[in-house]
Length: 429
Image (spheres, rainbow, N blue to C red):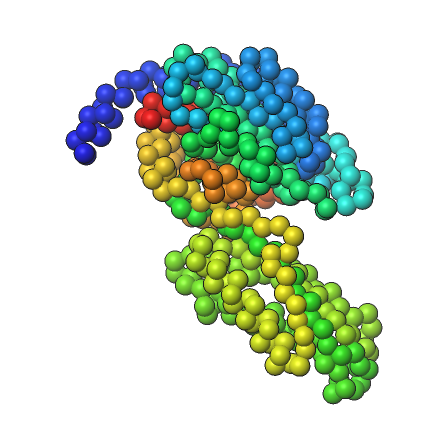
């Protein structure tokens, strides 16, 4: 078996070498256009589930390539299919589309001055997480793969997804809704690839992690009910404030004392506390809101069980009542890179970026709704460097901030990766 795989790999090497050379030439020629797309998209960002003009811009371009284009998927999503006319797998490539309610503070000729409505207020809008680059890179890959259609075997499905940052209050959106609406069907997708630009990783590098690469996210709410009393007579109360304090500390012991942290990181964070209105009144009710992040299915199940146990036990010990809502309003699964797929495509990463620039990275406790696609089909999600080489990592701006910045030069590697992953997977299958 190993000998057969080795012989097959050796036979494919000339094909890979020729295709990569062609991809490199096309990516070099296309780079100015990719940068132009990125600058336009950056200058005119739109909030989640409101990506109407963004969708029109993308759909117009994809129609111009002669692709089979569908709009209005999961409200504003765009899906295009490239059919090689030959039998083979269906490879999906995904980019997210939405901006954030963040005021841009970069002095760029293409800086955003757009506004949108968020939670009933008019807010500035910025691509503060790099989704503008994701769209531009996928548009570039669509162009190159269309130009190389004769070398494809199967179909490519280009997925431009809205609302990755979360749908507005009272709405649904994002990858979960795309899956429910059948984006991975007709034709049935065999594998999906996606990537994220990183403001903290050097231009020219790609980072990968088999298994859990980004965390599941599970928001929660705890409502603690006690008995109100004068602050001078606490013995007449059932104090939900003190109960909340005990509960916050108790929840921290789930990770520190119950999760096997040497295997998988996990987080339980309380981010909001509301209760009371005067210094001398012990209130009747306190509300806690927080988030759980896990990188392992078993750890996620353990924390779910422990949350209920801790909340109930601590409340009873303080003579209070507590109601736990978990998950609160949405939740994302673990962004899980299929280990076999990751191992199979690692040579593509190394050949495209260079072995020295292909980095096995640690998982992160941020979350991504790309995970909903990976629940249905094998997927691989990568990080592509966007930090200028002359900027120290400590000085690079964080994602979701007004100073967020990534270098245009980082996109060419992303275009090449999406293209080569597609070509290589088709040739191997």
